[in-house]
Each structure stands twice: as C-alpha cells, then as structure tokens.
Image (cartoon, rainbow, N blue to C red; front, side):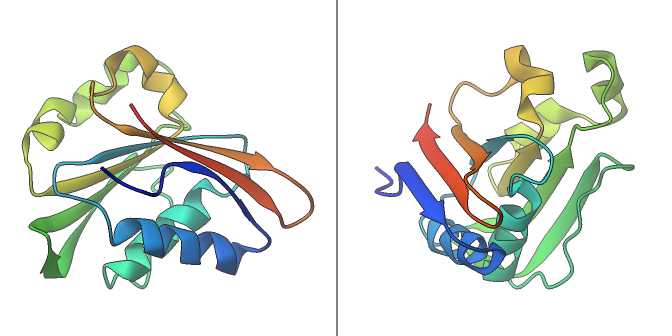
Length: 148
C-alpha cells in the first residue's frame, strides 16, 4: 500500500514538485495517475515534479498533441516510460481514437499521468490514483491523493 494517500497542502510550485518527487519514489509500474482540478491548480507543476524524479528536465503539457511519451534513461521499479496525457482540448471521447489508450494501459512498463481526467471519467482504468488539486491561496495548493 502507498502511504502517500491523504490531503497535502503545498505553499509554492517548488513544494508541489517536491511532493510529486516523494510520491514518484513510491510508484510501481503500470500505474495511472488521474489529475483533476481547475486551470492553474498545480496539475502540470505536479507532473513536472514526477518528471524531474525520473530525470526528465523539460516536461511541458501536451495540450495540442494530447499525448507525450518520455522514455526514461534509467528504469525505476521497471517503469521505462512516462506517458503524459492532457485532455484539456478533448471535445469527445472519440478523439481518443487517435491514440490507443488501451495499448498505453496494457503496457506495464508505463507510468501514465492524465490531466483533465474528468473528460474521460467513465473510461478511466479501474485501478488508479485520483489526485485532486485546489487553489488554497495565491501560491498554496491543496492536493488530495487517493487510491481508487
């Protein structure tokens, strides 16, 4: 069991990244992280922290391409690829046919992070982390991590 479940409050983007790095160290292969929250609530910052943990220095949100794949230079607990999906521009589930979600989820070597997960709510994998972000002030964020 992951001991990171619960509600965390971070006071800055740096703290959000640090929380993500701590969380990343406990993740197993084949995991899907579903991120929820308004614009600028910390989803991409958290994902960048995950990326930094895995040695990815330039991670930006794939808003226009929807899916970005980052092969990892070093394997961590058999995770070989970080897949970052941003569904912000998704208008219907049929647009996901452009990339094969089932294939992404079936490869246990992937760690999948989905921003704007609510756009695919009824199609998310059964086993997943739901991470909800809320603004709690100018730079503070409330981050609720839950294993589903």
